[in-house]
View 1 (tube, rainbow, N blue to C red):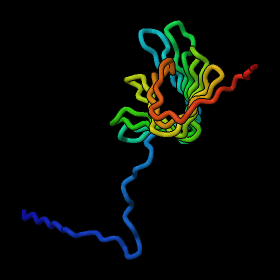
View 2 (cartoon, rainbow, N blue to C red):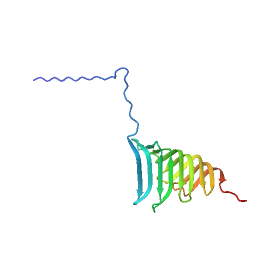
View 3 (tube, rainbow, N blue to C red):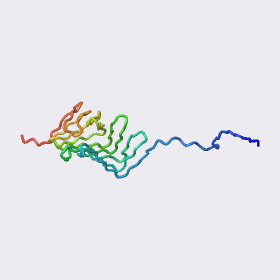
View 4 (cartoon, rainbow, N blue to C red):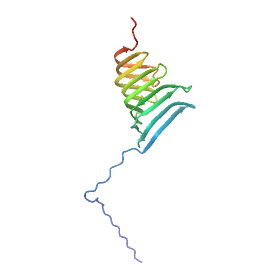
Length: 172
């Protein structure tokens, strides 16, 4: 018995006018109306709420419709809140970049920070920016460029102060 094999090799070319699809770079996962709780030693430390979270193949996350975060003390009380119109988490650096109308409220001293851009380092539990900041505290407004603070907003430093305005009435 004689056996014959024929191997045919050829190259496929797309028809003229067609294109080969590019590699997909969009999100691998989309979560709607997501609430995430983070705990440490059986104590809730943080709650994140977002209308939409997109997660990418490299571990980055995008919050295109904003993000609200509550930070908690060990006793369960809220230490501070952070809200932003848009946020992007870069896994490689471990930083969240919050933009738009960014507001931090510190519950301990009843103060509020407003800025257009803020970075949050979850591991170091700090926030910082080089942008203009406005802080309202104890009947005063403090303004400047750049800020470094603890995430609970119990301590902060304005890098370049632009001035202070007292909101208290002077009875003199």
